[in-house]
Image: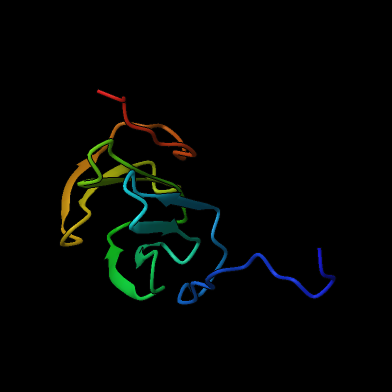
Length: 111
């Protein structure tokens, strides 16, 4: 392997703070990133273009995940909520409350 070879294909820039979580959609066409800037950003994985920025959390976003069909994004935050978003439009669909502390991980069931 050449010493100057780089495996980096794309740099996705746009968050204003740390990014603790990144996830690819099941079809590999989208990337979701969750950040300490309190946002989730969606990106076109092929071009690196910024798609909708998902705003609604009031604290760090620690975790993001796509649903198995790629239509939803879940995000977990220091604000003690899980939020569900429409991956196509960026619309917030639901806020799940009830946690007594930060939500550090989110996932969908395969079915």
